Length: 427
Image (cartoon, rainbow, N blue to C red):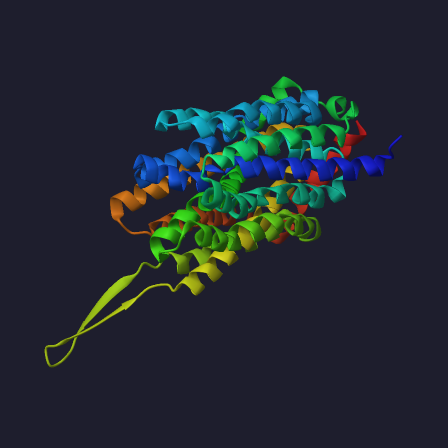
């Protein structure tokens, strides 16, 4: 019989692998959407909608899936979720109309709901002082977006875009079987400290939940939205081919996904607030640099002639700033969920579903807004101006609700939270 420690690590490993594959599938339209857009003659807005539809459905199901995980358990819910997406993934290769791709994309988007299932399933297997690291390791599975950027462009060039969904359907089916054989169920995770329906509904009236939704819509929603847009951005702004553009885009996608585990450790060590505050500021500064558009200057000289020159962000500086944003958001994704595990232990699945839903909705809206901004303004860097704005909103909100409080008040609040949880656990 497997030991509790073995079960912990086996569940964490299988969970993380399954989430990586789900995220890989969830973001595949960011890559195959490029040749599809060329075939169908789609505008930037239409491309944004195509890439974003799976993000919407994956976000909408996070709330009910999180609640189901609290009641039923993560193993059966995650398994059923993966199997449900396989037929739709496989059918994408036969789609010839835009509306067909949108419908199939909506079904494929269910794979994104695996986050609220897996994060709750993972947390329940670990002690409180190790939950931040465990959830961070699991969350590193969003590096699946980087896997897509490595795999999909190569497959597209060699075999055509239709081969990508065929390959991904087989991978998802195999992953579901591996997951089932290497995970376990614990009835106590479903029954212990189970919140009542009234308690679950009351969560929606907690203003802190909506604040964490805002934070997560930046660090996770931004990550997803930018991941879907980057390949197209590098191709249009710097004249690259799809394979090179996707490869350079992994400088943002891969570190941002992998470093989430480190963000969980930092959150355990220094607290969710300090880590999130630092991440927001780091990304704000980098986004300010990325937002500067290519500009032509004309200076009137004393002799009546004009001195003209231009300035734009070179690709190396843009990519470096992008890397900083990716690191900051990757750590921030873990620190926001540390807030949740600290304050909402009894109904973590429900709250993580709400916050995950907000993050996913951000990832859905951003590509559409990116496309609309570019179509309307004609300025490619307007997408980074938008990201700068929503990050600034989070910083102001955090300062108003957390930072401006005296230090002793924040400490007292933290101590009260710990005492309240200890009392609940003793009950």
